[in-house]
Structure formats: C-alpha cells, structure tokens
Length: 516
Image 1 (cartoon, helix red, strand yellow):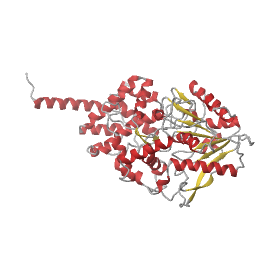
Image 2 (image 1 turned 135 degrees about the horizontal axis):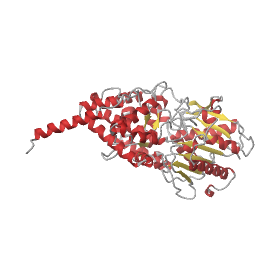
Image 3 (image 1 turned 180 degrees about the vertical axis):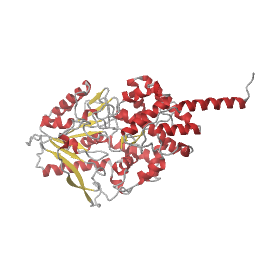
Image 4 (image 1 turned 120 degrees about the vertical axis):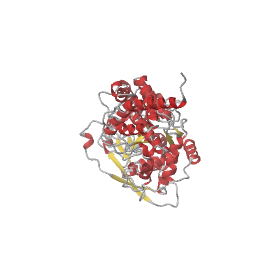
C-alpha cells in the first residue's frame, strides 16, 4: 500500500518524539555559572602552579619585588615608566663568578610564587647552585603598566615588549645583585612563555645564554585546526571507541536542537543558565554552546595527568564515562562529562550566551573578571598569534558550529571592527616573519613537547638542524616536564628531565649544545 507524504511526515515526527523522550531519562546533575576554559587556556593561566600536591616548601614566604620598566621600549619620545613585579630565590645560590642565573618567564596569568620553591627548575637550580628569578609578564597579575585595559593601552601588550622587558630586567639585576659577566643566564618557560624563552635567546643572545622552551607554540596560525585533531587523537590513544561515541553525542545534540522538547532536554542535561529555546535563532549563542562542550574535552586532554592543579580529570575518566552505556545514550554521557567539569570548576550552570561573554571581555577595569588574563590573552591572539581552535566540518566529532569566523567576530566585537580577517592575517604573517615560525635560527635552545598536548602541533618536535635539539615525550601533556616530580611520573617523563639536566650541564660547562 502506498504511503502519502502527510502520513510519512506524521510517522517521522512520532519516531523523532520517541527518540527525544528516550533521551530525556537523564539523572539530575550539578549546576554551574560560566566556563573557565577559553581559547585553549584556563582563565587562570596555562601553567598554573607547580604541583597539585600541597607542600610546606611552597608555603614559605616569597616577597613581592618591583623593578622599573619603560612603558614602550621602542619609542624615543614616550618616557612613561611603570613597576614590574618579580621574585627571587637565593636559597641554592653558590654565589661565585661561575654560578648560573635561572630566569622563569611569566606568562598569561598572575605569576605564582610557588614556582620559586617548587618545580623541576628548582631541582636544577639546586644541582647547579643557581640564583633564581621569576619575572611577571606585563599586563598580567599585579604588573599593571597602565591605568586600565583599554584597547588603546593594550597596544603596549606585545611579545616584543615582553622580550624587551626581559632584556632590561637582566641588565638591571646584573647591576643590582653584582653579578659577573661570566655568569650565564638560562631562561625557562612553558606554553607561551616557552615561546618567549626561545625568542629571548634569539633576540637577546648577549644576555640569555640558553633556554629550555617547553610546550611553546612557535608558529602563529589563524586557523588552528590541528588543535582538535590532536584532542581527537589523544582520546583515541586511550580507546578509539571513545572518539566514535563523542562524535555520536555531538550529532545527537544537533538532533535535539531541532525540536522544543529536545531543547528543553538539553537544558536539563547540560545545566544551561538560560533556556536554549531563547537562543535557537542566535547562531553565536549556539556556536558558543558547542565550543564550551568541546572545550570540556580539550581542557582535559591539554593537562592530562600532569602534576598540575588543572589536571584533576583525565582522558581515562572522560572516556570511561563516554563508554558507559548504563548512563544512557551518547548525548547523556556527553552531558555527564560536562557535569564533571562544571562540578570540578564549582560552577552552577553552563553559561553559553555570546553577548554576555563579549560584555565581560569588554570590561577594561583591572578589577574585572576578564582582567584575570582573558581580555589580555585574547588581545594577544587577535593582535599577534591567532591560535583559534576551530571545528569546521559536519563530519568532525565536535561538529561544524565553531568555525574561524566565530573567533574573528570575537576580536572585532571586543576590540574594534578593524580586527577583521585581513588584519589578523597581516599581523600573524608579521609574527612569523619576525620570529621565524617553525624554522628558528636559534642556538642553545632545547625544545620540549608532549605527544598528548595539542600545542605540540605548532611547536618544534624534531630537530631541523644540529642547532635545534628537541625532546618529544610520548604520552605526556602540556608542560609536563616543568611540574614538581612525583613518584607516579612515567619513565619517559623521568628520562626527559634527565636529558634536560644533561643539556643544562652542557650549556653551563661550555660544551656545544649540539652534543645532546
């Protein structure tokens, strides 16, 4: 018997309704406020603190010290100055003309005093009798060069100015601490400061003798599609089936969005702060919703099993949830992962409203939430680096809801319409021309990356010549080698730290860096 089009549509809608009701059997979960993972970083920084394990060492008093810097190192007419914060630890200092000076470079968050007592670099300092400094990055933490974070003032927030800060700091500390010209300065940095560590050696070779560059993206790139490709591969390294189920979960979210019952079901599952039905015609809100859910997995992968406060939930944890069929269909498991992240972040609901995010980012006050680093770091991505982690194909496991245009619009909405795609392509091209991208001309720099870390896709993981030694640590995530060593560190991480120690010995004993 032939079936009419109206009968077919009726039956199709009934089947869809049954599917939606089946998905609605989710258990109640925790609720939350606003996601803290944006543009590949936690709002409180990439590196965080040196250990998730409490230590009496890290509680010892480290005073704030201040150093006067020019606001603009490259202007002959701008005479403005400001106070930059730094810390010092002379506990292991040998205090002779051959003792090295270690410099930890601050990054896109407040500098943590705990790094002055803990972390792998402190063990290296003890071994070599080094004097240790940490310099907080301009415009982050308490290092406020200007009265606010207006777009006009943010013109002074660049990697070039930060490198010039480092150069001026080294010269001033040499004089202040009566350091000999024979004492070699070694720079350390992880993530963006890992890039700065390499570039400091390249641009100021007379001041920085060598660098350990960890997890540093050297290549500025507008459309960083590789980020979620590595996230996908890292999930698959636990179990390939995990990737398949995540993809099915995102596909089921798309189905639920098509009907009001499904939208209400998503509100319940994902603990949304506002009903999705109010945003269903707002593509920016929906893009932000998808990017938030994808970032649940990105944040877990980026810090997987690091001895870092960020690394409380692992790839194993989220994949075990995604593969647990007793929880319900894939979308319900996806929501369970989201609830884990919200609970871990002490958040009450999932806030995906685009305009609210933009309004927060537009706040130029130093007392604002965005001043914890989000406004500043987003400015640096819009003005120098790009690094936008996109998902652009319907066949991608995270869907196609957050494409490149979504991130370019954020630049324009937060800082001004001039920050369009032409501007971004221009500044990113200039950044790569200035620093050399993945073809650095550096010497005395050791490049360290982990295979799980998505940022290794923009870093140097194989030597391009005898002057660019690398360490690629299978199975470790972002900056893993920098954190305080613990007994459960995998053998390859322990070996990497030994190689770094050996490399430092070569640098400090005058051996060629090519003998690694």
